[in-house]
Every structure is written in C-alpha cells, then in structure tokens.
Length: 499
Image 1 (cartoon, rainbow, N blue to C red):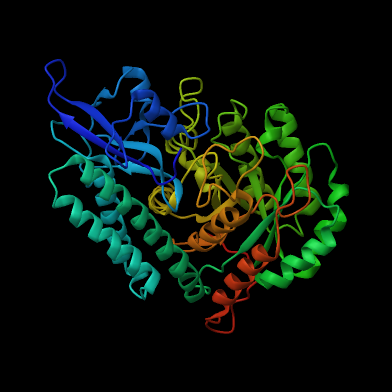
Image 2 (cartoon, one colour; image 1 turned 45 degrees about the vertical axis):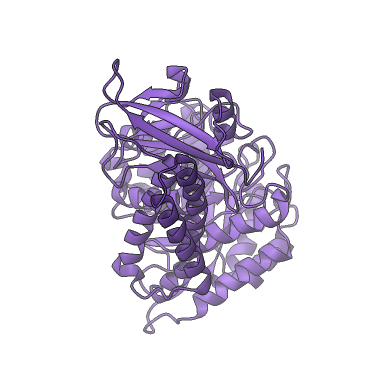
C-alpha cells in the first residue's frame, strides 16, 4: 500500500430498491476508483477483517458491523436511528486512526451525496472547534505547529468545496483529515500537562508504567523515580502462578521509594483460566497481602474484551464490593478500547460502550473509584479525534470517577495490524510518538489523573522497549507538571485521590 496514495469518497443517493442507501465510492490519490476487495484491504490493514460499522451517533454503540461485507458491495443500507459511519483508515503522517462520520452531528437517514474524506474532515473540524471552545481549554495558547496544521487543513477544505469534481474533493479532504488529526493531537498533547499542572490540588497527576516482570526491579524502579518523581506510578501485574510473597521485595522497594502502586492481581490473559471462585480468592489474597503498600487495586483488566470469561462482570462486581466495603481500599477498573476492530459476529456486545451499558449497573459503577482505558492502537486504532470523543463518553458513563489511561503499548508481537505515524520504523519513531501522544493527551480531560501504564517497561516475555527517548518523554512530562506548584500547604502529592 502506498502511504500517500489513498483517498476515499462516499456518495449517498436515492435508489429504487431502498430509499436510504449509502453508495461508497473510493478512489486513490489519482482519482482511480478502488474495487471492493481493494477497499477492504485498505481499511483492515494487516488485520484479518474489515473494520467498517454503523454506530449510534451519540453514544458510539454498535448498530451494524461490516455493512460492506453484509451487502457484498459498496452500496449499503442505512439502518434506522440516524447512525454514524465508522471506519479505520490511514492518512499520510498519522497512519491509521478510527474515524467517525456523524454528518455534523445529524447522522445519516436520507438521500444526499457525501464525499467521505471531505465529510470526515469537516466532522473532525467541528469536534476540534468544540474542543477548543470548552471552558477548561480557554487558556490554550496555540503553538505555531497547531496553527500550521489547522490553517492548512482549513485551506484544503476550501479547495475541496470550491471544486465540483469528486476526485478533487476526495484528495483535498484526505489531506485535511491528516492535518486536522495532527492538530487535534497537538492540542491534547500541549494543553493536557498544563491543565493537569493547574489542577493538581483537585486531581493530582500520575505518570505510570507496567511491571510484568521484576528481575531487575531495583534498577527499573530507580529509573522511573529519576524520571517521574512523586508523580510516578508502578502497575504490578501480579502473576497468577506466583504467591504474593514473590512480589514482596519489589512492592516494598517501590513503596519506600515514594512511588504510587497500582496492583493488578489478574491480567485479562489469565482470567479465562480461572474459575470465578479462583479469581475472587486470588484477588483477595493480594489485597490482604499488600493493602498497606498498594494505593489502587485493579478489580478487572480489559474487562470488555471478548476473550475474557463470560461472567467477568460478576467477578469484578464481587471483588469491587469486597474491596470497597470490607477493606476500604481504592478500586480501579480497566476497560478495553475497541468498537469494530474485532470479530463482532463471533462475540457480539463487546464494543466498548455496549459492554459498559449492558454489564455495569450503577451499584457496580459506584464501587469504582477510577476507570481506565487500555489502548493498543496497532490493534484498535484511536487517534486524537476519536480519543477526545471516547473520553467524553467515558465521562458520561462514569460522572463521579477519576479517569485515566491504564494500559498502553505499541507493536506488540501478534497484534501488528495497523501502523501509526511511521510504517517503516514502528519500534522507533512510531513507538515514541504513540507514547508521547497518549501520555500527554490523557491529561486533557476533566477529572483525569493521567497515568498511561506502558506495557513493556520491564523486561519480560513481551520484550523490553524502554530507552533514553522514552525516559526523556517522562522527564519532560514531569517538568511540565512541575510548572505550577500545588496551591496551599495542606495538599500532599502522595494523597490518594478520591471520588
């Protein structure tokens, strides 16, 4: 696939057999039409399946998965309810992102003609303008980089709208998509740390990494402290085949060092191997062992994922209730980002917001202090446009909880489906840009504690991908957070945030 050579157009028109059908027209950058197999190849990257979907235009719940495949053509019916159309698609400098075409908030229901790249750019601009206009970002001072991308994208839209040729609209719209996506991420990356710094008294920021292995824990804990200081958080993935005593020295060392600790007794990869009783007992054994040292307890990891046990909602409900009401500890729940990048037909109901709605009643939500998102953009693309939307939706679902990014990784073996930023250097510049973007951007949301939980900080079977560039990323983020001291004298940086 030529990275710069793809663009797409969609056209809605009236059909005799269906009054609300979407006819999809895709072209390359030269205006050559793409066939159905070519379209499917581009949208799915290296994944096994395509990623297009109809979703509810407000709540981002699945309406219909892979409508192109279902129709067997590039003409697809529009479901009732004014849905939005979602798709993974690459742009020149960002790579794959998750794009949601909501038709300027109206969704789709009737006959009209739409060039999708232009419409997506316009939708992205609308959401970006709304993000800029929120009171919490009133102090954002545009950087030259932001203005360059924003102004260039706006010019592309003007050129597109000034032409009657779909090929021009599509080409210019695709360029605008790329520039607006980059502008969106620059906003979040630049303003996030400033917002967190200014609000430390109410929501103390956290910068964290994940420890799956503790063979070199002293050196790695020291390194994290050197970069992050007392903003630092270690997320221990306690192995289910080792007793708590195996982890005692590492937990005590991190606690004495002054770092926050997030304890995760059961990873999502281990859940299905355990019975419900085993899961709950294992969780309780670690809480009982380390309640005095561990600041937050992850009652469930990536719980919306389709690979977990069918009763995971019951497991986390019992663990959270016991942890909150019997032990009085701070609870955290991690959900997995995805909507249409998995096999929905084989396991319906695991798109993020459908799962939350179906599986987490209010009583269970009330037992959660922090809700975090697990993001692997090479497995389920996101990007600034979708990240902003998803975090706002999480805030709607969890209005009283702290939010955070609880797990993050890039180019993990076995899930290298969609490239970000640099297709030719995924473990170098692309990995660094993924980390920089999400570590900084996650702070730019109300009541977010930040975190991030990079998966491969410590040496493990997944690999070790920390390096001086990643160290500098954390160090620079710390310096940004240090820019404004905590107001008053009564707020301790080590105070555990509460709801």
